[in-house]
Length: 215
Image 1: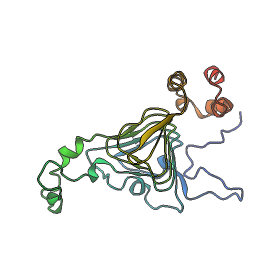
Image 2: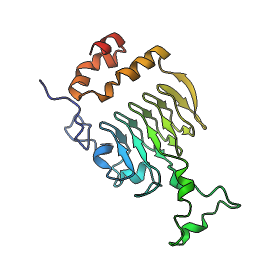
Image 3: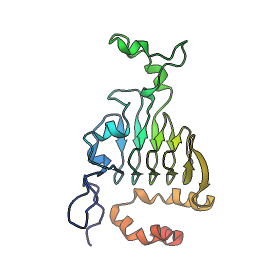
């Protein structure tokens, strides 16, 4: 059997016609080592230039030991400028002032942890496309197969296979009918071994549900 074209172990998944790797596109699972960020295989981020710290680029407010996590599934595609504004970016909102007085004193800087934790984790499903400059706010869950439009500001959960756009992002349409969405979620091709996915590519790319079921 020939080797799969996709290689989850590769930091730089795109080979240019010159034979050089495209150094501004990375598999995030190979580029991020952060205790509060989980990324599935084949998920990539594509910038306009190489990045030194991909965790800081996509999620600048999360820190090791913070009360929230960023969980990203497999085969997610992120364009330049995608940002996750996780819960630790929030200021106190239960007081008379939103000024974060406590963070300027090492003895009290964890005073807002309980409030931050209340926003929950940010979760991105599998096979999600986040367009240029999309911003995802704290505690949002994006369903499998969703498309997030360029410059969208996602402030609420996104259903699987929905197309959302705008600020605040709203569902503009569903990619497929309800029966097809249900079938795709049941099949969950992204959990297959890569050799099986490669064999099923004609069905995936051709929207042939019967062939995908058979695969």
